[in-house]
Length: 486
Image 1: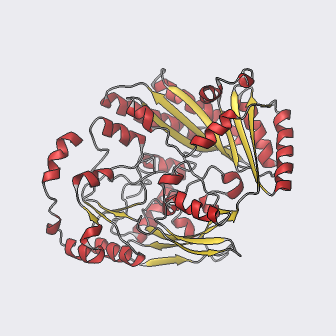
Image 2 (image 1 turned 60 degrees about the vertical axis):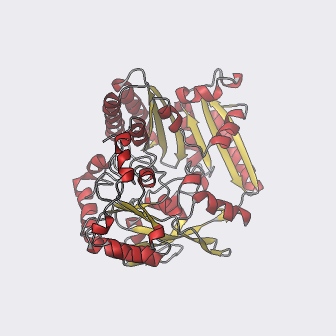
């Protein structure tokens, strides 16, 4: 049903009072903390999944409207709500800030109760000796970083969605920030957490520097995307705000030379917070006005932060490698432009202009990276030869990197756009997996990638995950159909 055909629902009250659980829900959170209006529920009908944005442009929902949105104000209220929903066998979805890009928070089944966690938004404690901050799960990422910056610290987790994401969302989707080369990914930063299970029980994983007490319990919830429970509190590591920063803008003759430089930098043991390398198509709009890049068309950015002496040494050693790999130091304008705009979403404008844009990030070892890149690029062009395809490498490790591929296809009618979107994603994912890559680096699985989870983990592996889900959520109320699980 088209959204503009649904507007009549604005004048048709939802018969929530017919639900046996509704009076108890009102008593738990108060009527003022329930969202039932059509227009407000419409805002919760999707996340930032570009395909869903395209569906909205054509006047359709990607799935369904939530039945009601609940806004608990405490951990105890979340526990009570989940006990109530579990007893009623009522499907629920936890909603942070809706910044996911794979439909992980979109209601893809009818009659969903959505639990918005943003009222849990306080910093609870700061341990400046151990450098640990404890924060509620609904805390906005930008607000947390600003709070720590005021104390002359940084959490170090700076995703593109910083200003429109929550800290629990970071952990639930197993995110990676733009400065992960120095500070680590979210699983490296989180030291402890509290999670409310589907039956309302609270699991507390106390922070510790390291544990050898059996399998990692926290790993169950990292990347679970709200299918095992709701993360309500996190204890996170933080660092001193850097005293020195060096940003280098480099041109390489081709992306392969740039990859070789990044590999050698990481395998030397250097820790640049930012390593960003663009292929020629994605570099072109960023460097076209700067003659420095004429014969070195692939843009690369390196950043070093921290103690001035260490930063100077890291920069010196990295630049030695850059020059050995044929790199050239270029003007800094492209890097400053990226810094200025790095927290802005990129897909909204093309989609609003009638185009279809999406991104697919994967990880791969250095030895197979060119094969993964070429497979993915060919897959997009095989579906639409007129597509613009570009890539960059945004996170580097001793053994490999994150390849982040973007595609933009011309405007078309909805049916054709949906068909091409599905074929492109199939080609991208199969292309990465067939060359030995992992189908997701930091965006998670959500709804769209669920069908490839068996190929990623193998049938035995995905069966283990489903059995864990069956034990933790026997009534399958928590975000069913996401990350490939019931």
